[in-house]
Amino acid sequence: MRPDPAFALLGLYEKALPEVYGYLLARCGDRVLAEELTSETFLGAVAACRKEHAPPVSTAWLIGVARHKLADHWRRTEREQRGLRLVHDAGDDVEDPWDDQLDALRARQVLGSLSVPHQAVLTLRYVDGLPVRDVAAHLGRTIHATEALLTRAKTAFRRGYQEKEGSDA
Amino acid sequence: MPDPFDALALPSTPVDPDPAFADQLRDDLRRLILNGADMTTTVPQQAKVAALTPYLVVTDARAALDFYVEVFDAQRRSEPIMMDDGRVGHAELAIGDSVLMFAEEFPELGNVVAAQGGALIRVEVADPHASMRRAVELGAEQQRPVEDRGHGLAGVFRDPYGQRWLLSRAAPPAPAERVYQHGEAGYFTFQVPDDARAKAFYGAVLGWQFAAGSLPTAWRIEGDGLPGGLWGGPELQTGWKLMFAVDDLEAALGRVGAQGGRAGEVETHPYGRTADCADDQGIEFWLWEQPRA
Image (cartoon, rainbow over all chains, first blue to last red; front, side):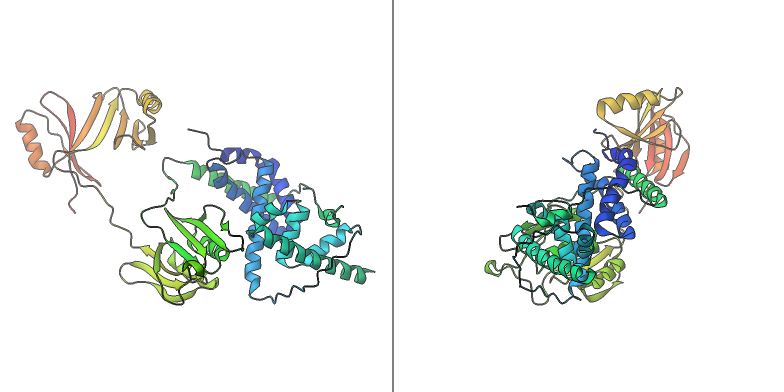
């Protein structure tokens, strides 16, 4: 009989909790939601770590579980909003070189103002720095669809950022 | 060329959550782990491909996946398989001990959603009323409300992706008690001078597990052991003591006495009436009359 790997979770809890909560809070910006997703992460990890061939329990692994919970949350939200929102993704992809150094605070505000799919794809790709293939897997889309979404999200982000620049000035 | 979007990168910074939240989650986690770890009493259901497996055609497999998880408490089994054109070519979920497979429409293969009607699949859920409510909230069309027509609770809906479901919670089945034939041994008690040593020995040699019984030195043999128990004490006759089923306890006790054995007092238990006996050479056994149906 192999020992129950879930006990390692209890042992790691005090150390991993601020890491997981900090990761989620910074990405969803909402305490209540971050707590909810933190619970889902730890409680979901119990069954996940007991699966055959599950990787050993570690903080990095828990952050990965948290990222999946966050992606699930975005997908739920997107579905709930789909019926209400008139999607208009303007096709005017501006491909002008955009070399400005982004102002981090403004960038984060703009990111928070985007639609859920755009927030999701930009967060996974740039805030977490995942390759497009992994972003696609988290969002349950094809690589091709993810690249297209990423292009639209960047366009929306640029537009929002430039508008904000205008209004802040 | 550096990507200006790289400026969004955010290293993970630990943040201490509200201590009350941290305590609550620690409690929840401990309870979940400890309860779930008790493998002797709760064996988690293992879904496997059985004789029949529904393979559905749905309009939106990703949404259907989330819907079935929400409404049927299904478990994700593997990542959906994506085709080059973005359609989902295969997805799988586990519901209870069964596997559900589905894919999106492929008209070129004849796989399309029925415009109306179509097959009805019955699914057992813990609370059909709650499942129906959640299904309707998520866009399902209720076709028959949940009610009990004498076969347990049942109701029908069509999900937003084209499949019809018969939500059901069967009436609790009568306990399927096995009936033992006259003369058959139905229960085995292993009597030993020292129960702790026997537990250690048979646990190590055969992998038996033991659950606490009605007395401090009595143990139920769990798992793949014989249907029976272990009982320790220096005053007990050492060895296996069997319980034999009989059709008529009083008549059998009469025969025990007539053959020179010792017929014990009749005791009444939830599982039937028994008597502690010994044969004419002193070997102990029980007689057992099962409750009549």
